[in-house]
Length: 274
Image (cartoon, rainbow, N blue to C red; front, side):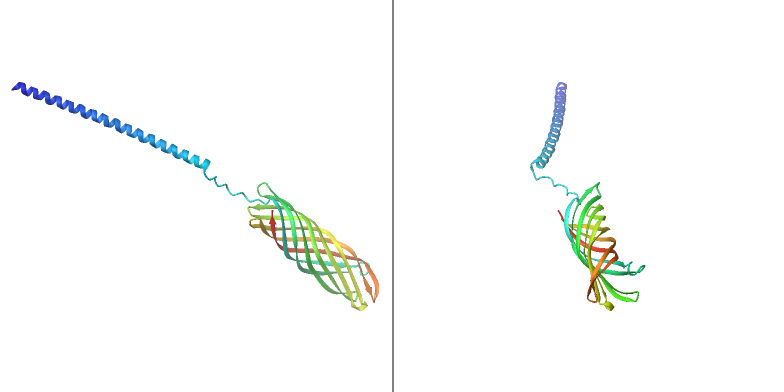
């Protein structure tokens, strides 16, 4: 009986040991399987990420081209345009041979309109240099009635056109341009005088040369179009003219008439840049 118990105990112990070995083997097998599963998952993830990156690269290479950044605005180029505005000034007249030390000053004003053409070059990021030519038809005129040495007469001065050729220097901030300009100027003038007591009528015309300075601000508001507001000062100095006409029905000339002329102009303009 004791031998049977020993046998049973041995069998039970062997079975227990085998069960432990089986469990240990099973645990080892499961651990290895889990490790292999984790490694496979990591490998798949790496392949997936790599394929995603490759797909993105392929999309960049063979898909739609990348959107190019918007080009920076520049004032470089040429333009043509038109303007409207008004002018005002004064003319001082003297005839030293007839009335020494006596002068008469009259004011003039009126509208003008015309066109301009020019070219710009932007450099150093914000600086703009350029040249411009402009011309305006005008109706800048004025009358004055004055008594000199007891003789009363009425004189008229009229500027029919103004033109200039200038250089420009400006500072730009994106689509805004603040500029100054200066150069040569020309004007077409007419003069007339009437002295009733002598039934005297006189007239003259001339083209004057002078200089101009000015400045303004310009805004590129849409595509190739820009708008500007500008002020210009014209100085035509003093010129000597000869008036011709009639004195009591007889032809007459009055030489040595000095005329000093200055004009200011304010105008708004539109330019098309190309």
